[in-house]
Length: 236
Image (cartoon, rainbow, N blue to C red; front, side):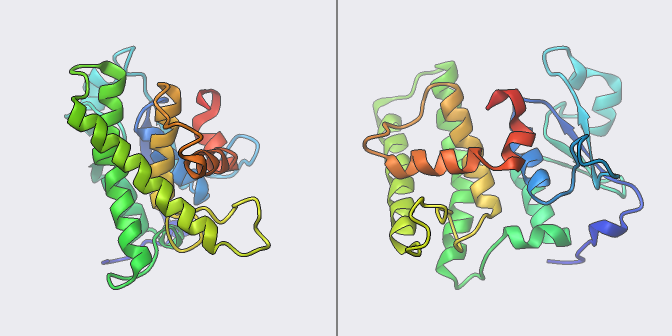
């Protein structure tokens, strides 16, 4: 994975250019899970400085922002050495691979079944599921019958995985607090999937609760986390 950065020793904080609500919110959520940003109540010097931008007000089209990210998109992470990463999945991969505090947010090895699910849902959530949900919101164009079937299949696959996790949960966890994508603990895959579930709820596109009870329990579990609330704020 290359050089692993001890975030405690960063000379200057990394900068996360962030607009809420947007795809940058899930990156901010991960940073809160890792303690890389601090709420005003927590105080202290952050390891990731959050730079709020407003797409609606044109902040991402300013000369200053375009000098950092010529694409004019968020999320955008400016590393402590001045290099810049865009796209939430790339930023999450970087944090998990290169920042020591984040390494616990990945799981397993290439031969590990948990790691396969981790990689699968990390990618499915922010590529396939996100694209379907965006189309549900904009209806430009509306999902075809085949695409609606594919979205339904994704929801059912997630329900089946979470039901399997619930069945394997220890008896001491009757409230299903062990509902995670991989490894029986919170990982970056849960952040990415949880971000899409938040998006789905926001646009009224969550799957039917009766047919997908574990998906709804899982979403509620994630949204109860302090880091989620710190990132999503009023958009919960």
